[in-house]
Length: 182
Image (cartoon, rainbow, N blue to C red; front, side, top):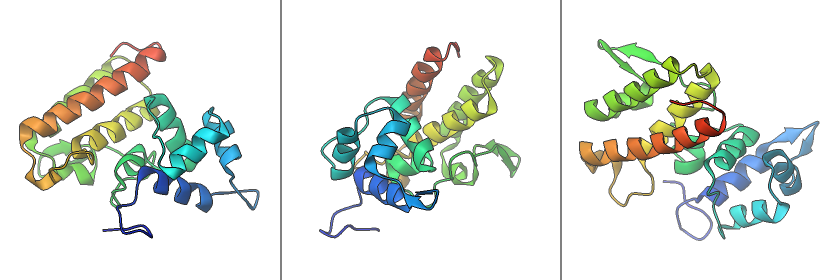
């Protein structure tokens, strides 16, 4: 487990700061102001995120932040080192079953089925591949739910499915703003 300087888990703010400091544009480090302009927020907001005083509450802002930092939403939310980089998630075939990416092979069958059903709805309503990839990332992050006090391996199917459903609600809200009706 990664720990910060004071012995606690690395927070979303720590991940934002680390990713921002690792970015270079034209050979120069990306500042909080640069990131704020790219995401469409005030510089003080980025500072508050990095200091742990607040977290992004708008799913669109979270998606824009992940895109600007060139990381996946899943990694930004959970810090899972196995998280698929942004734009790299694809549907795979394995053991006769479809799944979102290799990491979702661990999902309970019912949760995987629910997630795939939602992705089929996105295809049917004409979402772009990029929108489907973003949705895949959010659904997987929802399924893994790093906020839960119960470790993923110990959570039951019902809870995992409920978290996938909650992530789907976020996806729907974002797509409705884009004029899509999944």
